[in-house]
Length: 279
Image (tube, rainbow, N blue to C red; front, side, top):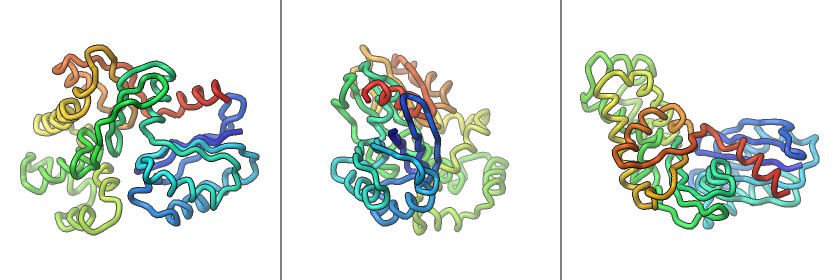
């Protein structure tokens, strides 16, 4: 029996798999070693995951996560080792999860557009090139966090119609002071900003909102995807933002003559199939 984890900055999907079949699914908070310590990740494992799996005999954990770079992945590995009695633990990036989940063993350009964003060229076995995402302050174009950042910036700088500004502040029960506090003083500002981004799709018929979203996706394609061989390979996408904004993404992609392939909200189904084939 194996335990597969797909972790973003907001949530972690865990799936117990035996003989290619899903036995159980568990949802916990996101575990990102760039924002959390080994102890904080361990606390989440103990409180939210362990009670659901302690009666199962698990041979291996395959953990894929945001922030699990070669420099940081040992933080997650040690947190799992310390709190779960499982003999074999593999930790890789969420980008590899997306690639294996959406491409299997085929080559393609793979993008994550969720709370954060990332991209790579996957040759069917390995990630062979990657444009650094740089996080929501310097990069993460097209992500929920950046969509939320642009949204609150336009709200507070009066760039949206007054009725829409009032609707936004009322819907989320926020003041300008609340927003500044959540972004600059509270932990996980990326999660907070991403949590506001559904407001955009709810009001996409407003021209200012539609233009904001298109601008974000245009930046994503220009600053990331066009650095790969997009003339010869389809572009596949994983993530909630990609899934819910599919039509707008496809519209903007046409401006670059980019072919959009598969769009999945989550890669878990593909990961289960991938690991079932190799076990």
